[in-house]
Image 1 (tube, rainbow, N blue to C red):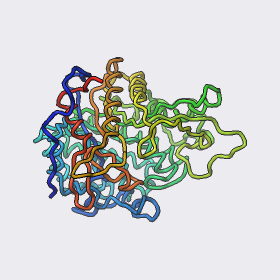
Image 2 (image 1 turned 180 degrees about the horizontal axis):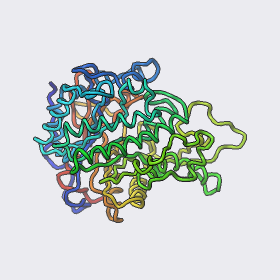
Image 3 (image 1 turned 90 degrees about the horizontal axis):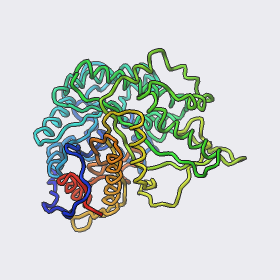
Image 4 (image 1 turned 60 degrees about the vertical axis):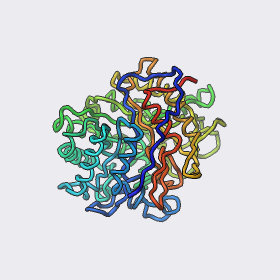
Length: 473
């Protein structure tokens, strides 16, 4: 077992009056099962699409896989102890579907369920609210073999799995997220193919997006039936989308990308309909014959909360006349020729532009759809970190968190019912197709020794939690 280092007892924030968050604000951190658990073939776990994808040559940088990852499966107690030392009020984690239901159907795997029971019990024993995400991209491989998310039956299987989890953990878990970032699952997994399962068909991507939302609606209903007191939501990754200029062509490009990135999910989930302009944009890709009577009513089953994942802003421009679109598979079906423009502003190690005001803008936009409580369920940044004399002074990440929390506070001041914030991520981990080459964690992980080292950002975040706010600028 590792020997987790502890954050210092001293408060790294000064005591001048600053920004205070509302009483009871839920301070948390988030992870995902495939990114941290490891134990890929232990205690009955079977392959997911990410196991298959990462073991396929050329799919993941340097051939990295999640076979071991952060070995959280075997280090659960130490990791929860670190969370407690940071003062986390909540921990958002996902369940590996193929760990608890290896074939995606049928009976539960008792050993897999026991792992999550132990995790939940350990969290509760340390005063940390469990926040369970049912699906963070790791579909059991047998369900992909049967058609994956483009197949309607996968939504029904997701509902069955939800009932299984509600029966097993619903007595101890209050907060439930059905899906994490369905845009990524659909458009990166089935459109561009840069995520598992690596398929490249625009019509399949659109169908996958619809069936993910249908599965969400069925899962909400299943949770309501099994655990009426559960607080149920969904997490969507959203981006402000701006035109590169005020020309009509650029404005139309922004409308198209906003439709695919944001309104494709927000409108069905919160309004029970697809935007008419989006359907028209996709007319060369699909005729939406996969949408059946009653689907949108199921998809828009009332929620208790909405999770927002925010990282950056998109700025786009119209196609250049006479220049053909990149022939590579695209995550923007029907709008492959829209150009994404960089503005020369600071970026993270992912190349994502840092735009804290976009978080305020995004939260206010979602609040325009619904008066439900909102939570920032992911927000964070990858930077190149250096472990020097047992310390990681990640000043850029700390500044990123500080700026975005100030933006979140501005949203609260504007009347947005923001109830909590989850930093991404608790620890460095397997960053999907980037493998272990990108670090998002507040806690540094040495992947050889599995030693955890809280970074400066972790110590700072612990201080923010203790004071329920930020220092004055």
